[in-house]
Image (cartoon, rainbow, N blue to C red):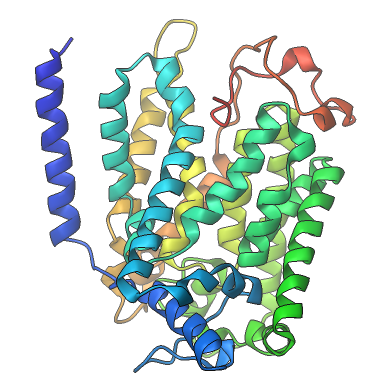
Length: 415
């Protein structure tokens, strides 16, 4: 066992190496997205401008989220630009801490690792993950949305499911991608929670409509359907099914093939999500839903792939569990390491100037293939049951659901 002084030295080296990498290697995004939020809200509040008419100076990019997102960002109109950036960073740090505690904390405790050193390693690995570092340097809201959704997952995991749904509803009102989690609640029998989520999203949306009816009308009738506002669908950063199709046939603007692919993805997701909950593995069900949401969204920029983090934790957790002979799954650990490295590598950007040819079809869509593979093959938990683990009340009542005594041991969403 390493001495405390040795662990401290290793921790310092890891932090310094991570900081050096982040400062020199990846592209820095200049807080572009928080600049769009700041400019749009400022124009709306101080100059009576229309939210969806605002464009970031020198670009064709404007505010693309539902009106409630602008309402939730109103405090930015009261502060200076440096303070707005600082607030964005602080919120992302807090959201990251919550997400990691909920997802990884139980794994760290189960493995009996030294607390502070394990968290240094985990923090460095998390910071190197490309979608995470892009979320920070763009000033994006992705990690906040993941935290809202996982707050509901944690309520379900700790037997307080009657309070779940608000986080998913708020996330959906801010950005439409998390709406698939309402579908997850429905297909797994949580009708009450799905109703709470849908009601929360509707209430927040109506509140925004009362504040600015014109903005709401503009978004739902025009801006929502204008995908050109967010960039080219075929741009290499769009790691969704639509992005693959747009790069494969840039001249084809039809939607038939895309809709067929979306239907196929949703069918696989529904089957696997129900199987996960039937096996008592709600954490995998939420992870699968995040993967499917990234695939079916028309636009999934690389930074949106923070929704892959729960699936990576499930994969790593499964690989680290020992079998009856006390052995870990070394093959699965290798797969997990390869997937992680690829998702840190920025490999898709090698084709940023053109994505034609067989090599481009494979390489420029690397993150899509990873997301698809995880959706199809993410392992479900098969560990012995924990007879004292709390169970979502709705899960007890679902036809064919496992009885309370058969619920698997402590969920990574339960601390």
